[in-house]
Length: 94
Image (tube, rainbow, N blue to C red):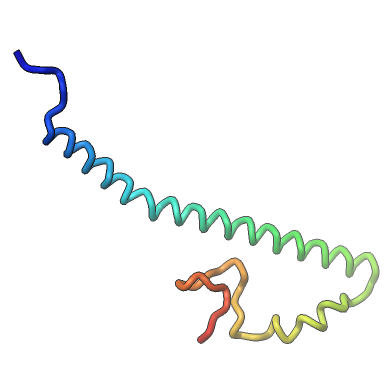
């Protein structure tokens, strides 16, 4: 009569399948987390834009911070803070 336990080959096969599934899921999970961060960052930038625009409309003025930040806004070497290069930095050194 055959025992109801798993053989070593069956156990190793199950472990190999689980390892393969995890190996495929890890890059997907990392990408999902990155997109979640980008979505949050873009939402925050949008809220800042709305706040600055509302301030300018309410007070018919130019925001003083706008003049101070202009040289950074027009600098082509700086990238959008929500985007990351392959090194993980938000500063484009090219």
